[in-house]
Length: 447
Image 1 (tube, rainbow, N blue to C red):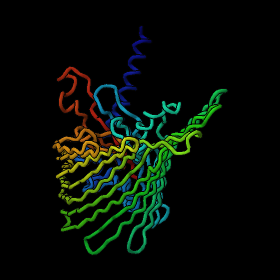
Image 2 (cartoon, one colour):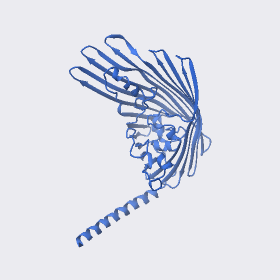
Image 3 (cartoon, helix red, strand yellow):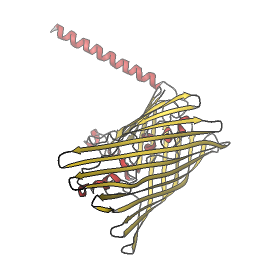
Image 4 (cartoon, one colour):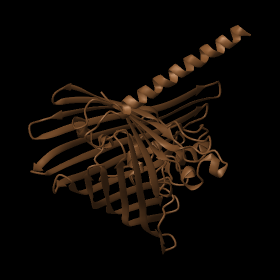
């Protein structure tokens, strides 16, 4: 009995020492002072500040994913997303987890590597929308060829370089991802693959005093191919086209040390079509051509004073989605006009280690649909678009109003967006339902 009491007493002492150690660690971290609001490198801060998922008016390290020249501005850090939940409870996704590291090689030269940042249209999951999700559309046709479903490219790797010249910064990145499957038996041989390659070339330049512009070009090449070979014939299902083109520009005009005006512009185009060929038929069977073209322009601001940060703006976006069925000669054009698209966020630094955030994102969308076969057109208006076109899976409805928290421990940062279930229903002791506190977590470590 005495030995048992001593054992329990010893365990209590150990537990107490561990608790005291943790408290000392946290108090030391909390007492650490930062002169400016910490710019994280993950998605959570942008979402919490009204991003869709990126707030283009926010000064944040996430800009490196758009323009690789920004790697020279945000030096020596490791960052990434832990993942996100689209619903409450135990469901969630680890496919959006990614990790990156940016290392300074010399005073004017930086290099970076990013694992599993999924940006190609081949990663987008929207089974009802072939303009954005070629993989699902191709998988609807595999049964006609005798193939299994295509997989999405696995674990893309992106390499980036950035160099600072005397008057401007130049950066480039190359991302490559792939997937393949093959099967060989007596009666048939099947081979399938999907590939994505994306190249970004960007620059950052001080145009004149208090005016800085950064711009980037995007070139993407996406393909899927499957071959079914038997004793009698060989049939191939593949994508034709699959090319992305993009251009993005942002200008920062500093009016004073607190307020910055930020006009932006963006162009994007992606076109592809599935094609079936066989050794018995000389001409390929082409079903439908899918085309997505988008342009966007607007202006916003960035205001910071003491512990407060306000960031936001409004843009006009026109997105044209067209399809042409070559077998039935039916063409369809769906034009969505966002007048406007709003992103707004507020960040408040409660202490040196604790930051609160609130954001608002909305698209006021007018949709016009034209179909040539019936010579009819319809126009509908809505304030909520069910799908936004983001490979991370965030819809406009999920981003309408957001809350977020940030924690700083020395050079380490954790950012999270508060889950909808926690906001609407409350914690367990109020609602009686288990809720996830965060729907998205991002990590950042300054080297």
